[in-house]
Amino acid sequence: MVPLKLKPALKDYIWGGNRLPRVFGIESPYDKTAEAWVLSCHPDGENEIENGAYAGRTLSDVLNNEGRAYCGKHSEAFDFFPVLIKLIDAKDDLSVQVHPSDAYALEHEGQYGKTEAWYILDCEEDAEIIYGFSRDLTKEEFRAAIEQGTLLSCVNRVKVKPGDLFFIPSGTLHAICKGILLAEVQQNSNVTYRVYDYGRLQNGKPRQLHIEKAIDVTNLSAVPADGKPQGEPEVKNGCTETLLASCNLFTMRRLDVEEQTTVCADNSSFVSFVAIDGNGVLCHGDTVLTLYKGESIFLPAGLGDVEILGKVSLLVTTV
Image 1: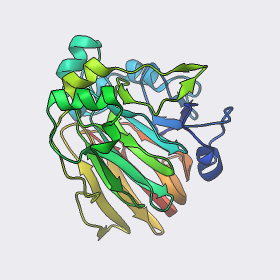
Image 2 (image 1 turned 180 degrees about the vertical axis):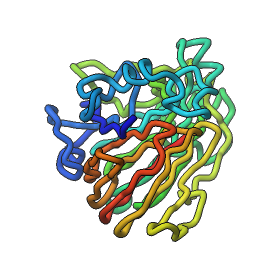
Image 3 (image 1 turned 180 degrees about the horizontal axis):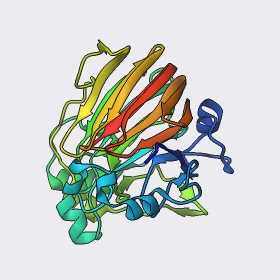
C-alpha cells in the first residue's frame, strides 16, 4: 500500500481558459482547458495512476482490485466512490444551472445527484458568482423568467475573493462567472440541468437546456451566501489547518505547511491531497512524491502517517 499520484482528466468546455496549464503546469492538448478532474473515478473522466505497481491503470481499477477497505469505513455508506474533485478555470461565464437531489437523479438519470463546494483560488477584480435568487419565487415566476429571458434580473449575484468558500446543496441555482479560478469538491456525479446559457452556440447550435427538470428540482427560496469557511485557521503540528466545509458527504480542509508536518490516513477514510500553492514533497517509506502546485495524491485508508516537507498549501479532502 503506497500513496498514489493521479494524472488529471481534462475538459475543453467552451467557457474555459488557459490558466490550468499556465498557473498549475498541467499539460493539456486543448486551446481551452476548462476543468482538470484531479480526483475522479467517474466514467466521464478517469484518473490514471502515475507511480508504483499500478502505474498506467485507472484509479477505479485500483479500487476494484483492492476492495472497499482501500477507501475507508466511511465510504461504506456509499454505493460508489463518493467524491469528485476539480480545478476549474472560468475565462467566460458558465451556464446558469442546477443539480438534482439524490432521489430525483436516481429516478430520472440513473445516478446520484450533486451537492458541491467551491473554494476560490484566484479571481479578477469584481468577479462574482450566481448563488440562488435575490428574492423568493414561485414556480410560475421561475418559469416566466426563463421563458421571457429575464432570469438574470432575479438571481443573487455575490462578489468573490480568494479564500472564499461556497457550499452549494443540490437544488441551488448557481453559476461560476468569468474570471474565477477555483477548486470544487462534489458528489461523484455529472448530472447538470442548464437553465440559461447566454445564447451561446457550440458547433453552430445552442447547447441543450433542461428547463422542465430544473423547474422540478430548484429551491426557489432566497438563501444567503457569505463566502466564509466553516472554521477558523488553527496552528498545530507544524502547519495551519482551516476547516473549509464539512457535511455528511465530504470534509474539505486547507493545510498550509511552512516546513514539515505529518498527516495520518487512518481506517476511517482515504485522504486526497491537491496542491493549490507552493511546492512540497510527500514521503512514506521508500515512496517520495512531489507535491507541486496542481498535483494530486491519493492516500489509501489505513496507510498511516505520511510526511509533508516544504512550503506548500494543500486542499485536503476526506469522507
